[in-house]
Amino acid sequence: MATFDLTGRTALVTGGNGGIGLGIATALAAAGANVVIAGRDEEKNHAASKQIEGHGGQCRSVKCNVDNLDDIDAAIAETTDAFGGLQILVNNAGIAAGESPENMTDAIWDSVIDTNLRSVFRFSRQAFETMKKAGFGKIINIGSMYSLFGSAQVPNYSASKGGVVQLTKSLAVAWAPHRIEVNCILPGWITTDMTRPVIDNQSFHQQIVQRTPAGRFGEPEECGGAAVFFASSASDFVTGQSLAVCGGFSVA
Ligand code: NDP
Image 1 (cartoon, rainbow, N blue to C red):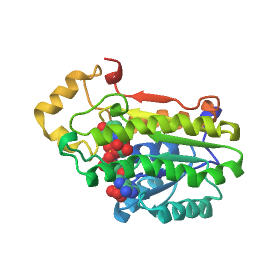
Image 2: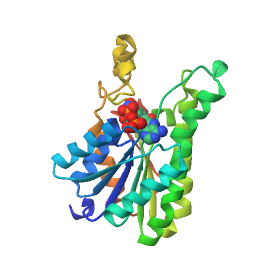
Image 3: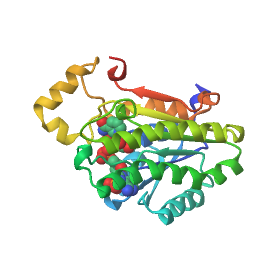
């Protein structure tokens, strides 16, 4: 369908070198977008780029730590230099490190809030002018089931992901007049490096599988369809929304 076609659009995907980010980057490229992967690990960046190009997509990568404002600006500049613009920003990079609230240090709190929430704000703010000039833009943020639920183990992660949902709404309200739509994907439990320790813990893994109506973990590429929708003109009148891609976890 023409409305889902991303030909001529350029997407920057933070943390696009693995896991959910790579699943999304692959789907955007398959729908016709030029893709730039922004991650810290250059080896992973190159491997992911090659993989996408192997499927016929246009892809570049840029070394970028989303905690660093200069890196953010450089990534946006390299994207516009490479492909002549930036219309789709996927704020996917994230980390999970936690502790019970009573034992949480400021350092653990700050590191997760900075990477998972502040970077979403900063990347969006720094991309705004480019999108405004282009006459439209699509920002896709990545939340979590912990955007909806609290957690005794990772309260900092949950606070960051709850914040991503609220930030999505605020950016959507502020930038709708500029034809910049801002939406959020809330993945359920997905098989990635981040969830490897959970998958390796048999009883915890079983508990989650049983708690998920679909009866399984999702795969990174299963987040791709929602991303293509939010990146395409099919979603031009959709903004500020959060869509759970979770096998029913959020409604059970
Ligand atoms: P992975 O650990 O597989 O991937 C995380 C990605 O983020 C990596 O590509 C990593 O790149 C990048 N990253 C982390 N910190 C930084 C940083 N400071 N600067 C640049 N890139 C960074 O995890 P997932 O794919 O599972 O997670 C992706 C997103 O999805 C995260 O926001 C996560 O919170 C969210 N999520 C994941 C769920 C799951 O079940 N897996 C469920 C719900 C949400 P590099 O190695 O180069 O630093």
